[in-house]
Image 1 (tube, one colour):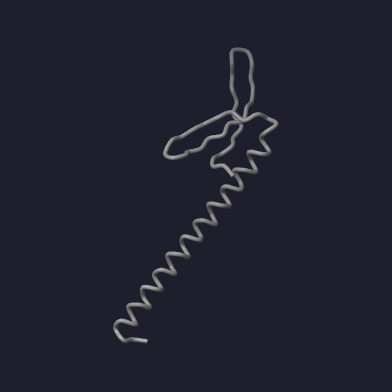
Image 2: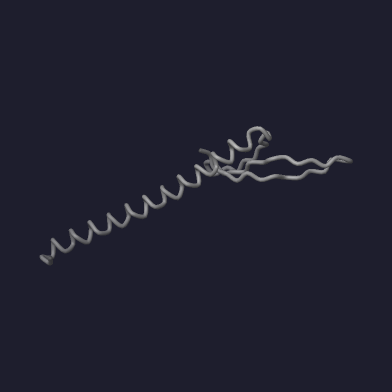
Length: 84
């Protein structure tokens, strides 16, 4: 797993044009970028996809945990006021 976006960039250096892969991400509040070799592109793509899936699942887990907590507090409130 790794965060970030993998994009293909173009560069123009004097008479040459060339393409390269770049990974951009933020980790601990710092933005970073780096080159990715052509032979590693498939691996890095898979890692970024896995990270995005992980983030979605973690967000869903947090949402459900908050809902559960709210329901527990509501139950305690009803029990303390004598309502059922």
